[in-house]
Image (cartoon, rainbow, N blue to C red):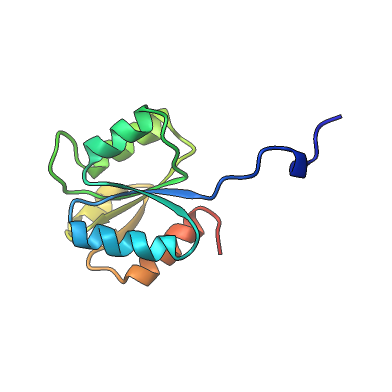
Length: 129
């Protein structure tokens, strides 16, 4: 007979991997997301985010800018995640409205965005109210 849910390991909080090279934006978005009781892991570029995932880091959602310094941009990060970690949901952001078409099947948020609205979309994407 399987163990009841209460006897199993407690569920972990939802975790968002926030990938943004602009420190102030990243800090404000992370704070707002944390106000909704989700785990937020911050990465300053796609390389850091990819290294985190490759090291066994947990994420239910990657919320990533497209244009960042480093060896890959947010779209390459999204492609790699989709190929290797298909269960992870992805939201792409950019200040360049033309990038919307590159986001393809991923959710897209144009910059500048309202932090509350971006957080709401992130939470809805991972199934939280």
